[in-house]
Length: 190
Image (cartoon, rainbow, N blue to C red):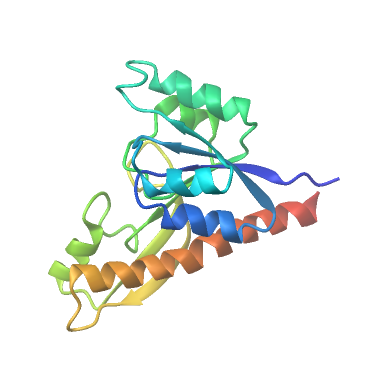
């Protein structure tokens, strides 16, 4: 019999991708939010929807972050980790333990514009398109195998704000599709 997979979402910001994942995952349950930012919007959403959350940062767990991630993920029997605006590097032990089970959504068409300020870089470069990429997380920043991408045109009058908004809309469409495709194939196989 098929068991829904348990998802942990790592988020640092407003939480729009976290909300989107929670509302649109068909074959998986979002059971845990991990954040490094006690004031992020994702925590407010977790509280309202009775989703367990953990705040893991240097001030709470000096020199023990790696162990805390691992402990929380094992406690909640996590099958898949989704990085949704998480602004910290994932420790090596977690990447090894969850190989090909950690996905990130990045606001560019990788391999272009890895790291921070990807939307600004796309605007400044004169590119005609940008977009977002869902990829597996490896130890090298934004370099894991690409799972899927969505293209967003860059309009002549775009600002960082207008383009960011459209890229986020593309992220909100793409991420649930990727998750549900992975989960559906798992449900059919087993």
